[in-house]
Length: 231
Image (cartoon, rainbow, N blue to C red; front, side, top):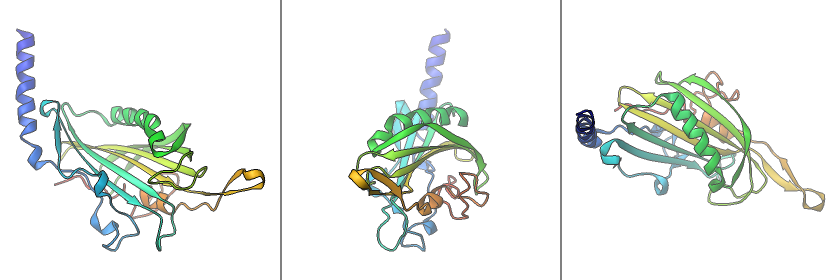
C-alpha cells in the first residue's frame, strides 16, 4: 500500500503547486537600479527573460528567469556585464548549500557558452541581503577566450558570481549567475595579449553591498544585494 499512497500524495502536491503558478513571486532587481529609471547603465534583457512562470514535472517545479545586462557602451565607463536571476518553486524546497553546489557545477560546465575559460579555484561565503535573507555565494575568475554577444575583447579577465537563497515568504528559491569583464587587453610585441585598464565598476554594481562581502566591493545599490523576492 505504501507505493500507491506515495503516488497519490505526489499527485495531490503537483496539483496544488500547479495551481499556484498564477501567484508565483518572481525575484527581480528593483526598477530604480535600472537604466531609464535613475539607474547606472543596467537594463532588463527581454530576449533572455521569461514572460511568465513555467510549470514543469507535473507542477513539482515552477520557474521564471529574469535577465539584465550592461553593455558597457555609451556614457557608462564599465565593461560589459550580465545577470541571470531564476526563481524556483521546488517540492521539496532544497537547502541553500545544495543549491550552491549544483549551481557551482553548472557554472563550471556552462561558462564556455559565455566565452569564458574558468579557473578551477573559487572563493565564496555568506552574506545578508538588503531584505534580510541570508545567501550563499561563490566567485570564479576566468579569461575571455572567445567573443560573442556579451564580451567583445578576447584574453580579458572576467569575474563570475553565483548566489543562492531561499525566500520562505514566497515558498521560492532564488538562483543568480552574474558575469562581468574587469580588464581590457592590448597586444604587445609579437601580438602577445597584455591585460590592462582594470575597471571593476560593473562588477561592483553587480555584487556590491555596504559591507563589501564579495571581494571587498562596497556599494549600497548592488543589484544582487537589493533583489526582492516577496509579492
